[in-house]
Amino acid sequence: MNNIDLDKYFKPDLKQARKRTKTTIEELQFDMNDAHQKIGLGKTYKIDTYGCQANEADSETMAGILELMGFKATHEESDADVIIINTCAIRENAESRIWGELGRLKSYKRQNPDLILGLAGCMAQEENVVERVLKKYQHVDIVFGTHNIHKLPEYIETAMFNKERVIEVFSREGEIIENLPKVRQHQFKAWVNIMFGCDEFCTYCIVPYTRGKERSRSKEEIIGEVSELVKQGYQEVTLLGQNVNAYGKDIKETDYTFGDLLRDLDQTGINRIRFTTSHPHDLDLKTMEAMRDCTHVMPFFHLPVQSGSNTVLKRMNRHYTKDSYLDRLNQLKTTVPGISVTTDIIVGFPGETEEDFMETLDLVDRAQFEGAFTFVFSKREGTPAAKYEDNTPEDVKKQRLYILNERINEGYLKGNMRFLDQIVHVLVDGVSKYDDTVLAGYSEHNKLVNFKGDPALIGKIVPVRITQAKTWFLLGELA
Ligand code: SAH
Ligand code: SF4
Ligand code: F3S
Image (cartoon, rainbow, N blue to C red; front, side, top):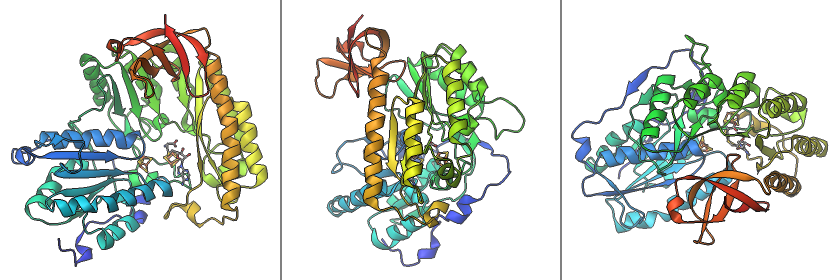
C-alpha cells in the first residue's frame, strides 16, 4: 500500500488532547447500514487486548461491531482475515511488547496479503507511535484511536476494497455513542462503562491524553444496561471509569453522583456490583454510605495512593496528602466495616528520595492494604513528569520495588488470614489453572478461592468454608 503523502492522514496531537472544553457532550445512537452488515460474511477476526478493563470493554465492542458485519471469531492468527491489536500506553514495557507483536505479525501479512491488520487503543493516540507506524510498519493497514471505535465498519471497508491505508485518530473526544453491539467475554460477569476519560492529569500519566475529558453516561443508559444483563442471567457487573468517583460531576443539570448510581443499581436485581478505579480526592461519604447500605455492592475497594510522601504526591498532582489519604481510608473502613482495600503504588518517581520512599513504606504499614499493583515510574512522552529531573539509578528503583513488594505480600497474607474458618460466598469462574478437579472464583472481598466441586457450579454463587490461607489465594470446601 502506498503512503507517500504522510500528511493526508488524521493523526493524533497530544497538545490538542490536553485541552478541555466546556461544551456539553451529546449522545448518539449507533446504527450500521446494510452494506456494512455483509462485509464480513465468510470471514474471520481476532482481537488481541492489552491494558486495563477499559480496553477489555472496548474490545468487546469491536467484537460486537465485527460480528454485526458478519465476521466470525477465530483464535488462529493464520486463519484470520482481520487482526486488531488493542493497545495500552501506560508504561514503556507495555508498549515494547506491542511493538514486538506488530513485528511478529508481519509474517502473516506476507502469507496472506489480504489480511487486514489494525492498531487500536491508547498507543494509537500517541503522535510518536503513529509516526513510527507510518514510517516503519507498512504492514499495518488501519490505525484508529479510543474515540472512534464506532467507525470501524468504514475503516475496514476502505482497507478491504480500496486497498488504502486508514489512519484516523481523533485527539479530542466526540459524542458518547450508545447502542453499540458487544460480544462479552464472560457469560455471568460483565464490564459496564459508566464514564469515559480522565481530568485528573496526574503528572506521570498518559491516560488523560489517550482517553479525553471526563464524560459520564446517562444514568438511564447505565441502569438499562445492567437491568438487561440481569435478564440475561448475569451475576456480577464491574462499573468502569478512570475515576468512577467523579461520575456525574460533568453533568451540570443534576447533582446525581456515584453514590446515587450505586443505590439505583442495587435495586436492579444484579447480585454483585464492583467498580474500578477511584481517585481518593473524589471519594465522598455519600459513596461510602451507599456501599454500607447496598447489599449487592461488594465490600472491596481499590484506592490507588501512588506514594506516601507529601512532596512526591504534590509533584504527582494528586491533590491529597499522606494524612488526608489515611483519614479518608479510616472513614471508609469505619463506614463499611470489614472492607478489603487494595492500592496502586509507583516507586522511583523523578526526585523520589530514600526518605520519600520510607514515607511510602510507613503508609503501607498504616493503611493495611490487602494487595497492591506496584510499578517503577515509566517516562511517558508528552506528560509533565517526563521533563522532571530524575537522578535515581535504575537499580535503586528496582531495589525499592523489591522491598515494597515484600511489604505488600505480608498484607496479602494478613488479608487472607482473616477469612480462616469463615464462610465466604464465591462466584465460581471456572476450573483452577493448575488442577481441573478444583474450582476457582472470587469471594465478596475479591479473594481468589479454590475448592473441590462440580463444574456445574460455574457461574453460580456458592458458600465455601475457608480451611487454609495462602499469600495469593484461599483454600476451602463447599459449606
Ligand atoms: N485511573 C486509574 C488507573 C490508571 S493506570 C487510577 O487512577 O487508578 C493504573 C496505574 O498505573 C496507576 O494507578 C499508576 O499506579 C500506574 N501508572 C500510571 N502511569 C504510570 C507511569 N508513567 N509509570 C508507572 N506507573 C504508572
Ligand atoms: Fe491517570 Fe491519574 Fe487519571 Fe488515574 S486519575 S487515569 S493515574 S491521570
Ligand atoms: Fe492502558 Fe489506556 Fe488503560 S493506557 S491502562 S489501556 S486507559
